[in-house]
Amino acid sequence: MPIIGIAIAAVVVTMIVAVPITYFATVSKLKNDANSKIGNADIKAREIIDDALKTAEAKKKESLLEIKEESIKTKNELEKETKERRAELQRYEKRVLSKEEAVDKRSDAIERREASFTAKEEAMRQREAKVEELSKQRVQELERISGLTSEQAKDYLLKTVEQDVKHDTAKMIKELENQAKEDAEKKAKEYVVTAIQRCAADHVAETTISVVQLPSDEMKGRIIGREGRNIRTLETLTGVELIIDDTPEAVVLSGFDPIRREVARIALERLIVDGRIHPARIEEMVEKAQKEVDTMIREEGEAAALDVGVTGIHPELIRLLGRMKFRTSYGQNALKHSIEVAQLSGLIAGEIGLDVRLAKRAGLLHDIGKSIDHDVEGSHIQIGSDLCRKYKESPTIINAVEAHHGDVEPQSLIACVVQAADTISAARPGARRETIETYTNRLKQLEDITNQFKGVDKSFAIQAGREIRVMVVPEQVSDDDMVLLARDIAKQIEFELEYPGQIKVNVIRESRATDYAK
Figure 1 (tube, helix red, strand yellow):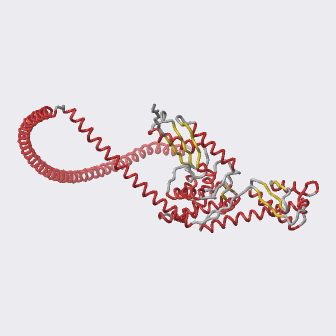
Figure 2 (cartoon, helix red, strand yellow):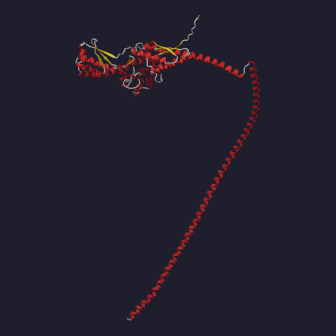
Figure 3 (spheres, helix red, strand yellow):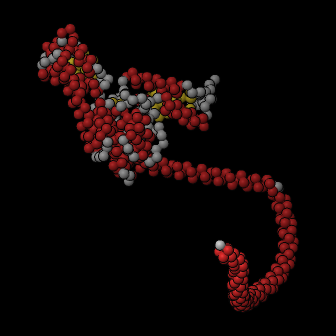
């Protein structure tokens, strides 16, 4: 046990001694290794720093060299540019100096010219003063010789010249007007006469009645029917009055609508031929007659366009043209009148070198408004122009329709030609007629219009209303007033009356002096 204890004690002591020694030896070795490594690192760091310093120094030198070269290059360029600018400024300076020299020379020349002009101006002033003085002396001498002042002589001369000029001007104007009137009237008469001679048209007097011939007087009773049923049915369906009187073998159809009258005539003739006359049959025949009349209207319109030689008219306008066969104006058939106006327009247009087809078209359509003027409000002129616009007629045609009665100003020669042709057709002998009542009323209105003017003593409508002769009081109406009075009367007649053709207004002024020998 003592030995084990001693051994243990020796081991413990050994360990106690060995551990510190080992520790210190290890620490010392570690310190030495660390110091060695630190020394090596310092050396390497110093080497790296030295290399970096060397590299930086080299790059610094290179940069300095590059900067120095760039600055030298920039300096050279600036010096070159400066030299060029300096040379350019020198050139500009030379030019300015030369211009200044030229300006100085020019200024000297101008000063010399001004001095010369001043001298000449002064001489001119002196000369003008001398001339003015001589002129005054001349005027004074003339006034002394003539016994008139300059203003009086001037007025006298101007009056003399003015009178001469007025006389010559009036004479020339009168001669030119007379010559123009003679030439124009001569040419117009030639054209109109030629057109009238080449255009021949038949005139048929239109009436408000139609006569249907009967095979016998027994047919009258069948037409009347039991208790008048047949005649009432026919009158109701057609709107036409049937007059059955003592006239042998005839029935009179009376009505102001020609289309209705024609429908009634056709229906009655067919009923007479058929022999079966009763209300149902009458209604059937009237319906057939209406269709036949509609077909007739279209065919008449087509025939009118073909007769005149006008193509491309809208079908509705063709139908309206056909309706004009059953329309009258002052007893003149409207369709025949339109055809005649178209032919006359074409002839006149051919004489004066205008478009013949366009003139015929305008003449044919000038009264198209009359076809429906009983159904549509407004004048036939307005209705006709609206129809032409609706169916895409040319502006020339529309203006001719509007201007053929003078409602608007003609804008083409075609319109004037249509106006003349319309007047010619209406003024033909036998073309138009009026009832006696209408005729007498128009004459009375004509005289009444004339008598209302101041200074009118008497008035007489003569030449079937184509002329009004006016007798004036000489103390109230002078010769100059006569011209104005005639114009005023004509304008008033145009405003208040409707008439075919034209009315001539003659104003007569008569002065008488009476005395007695005793």
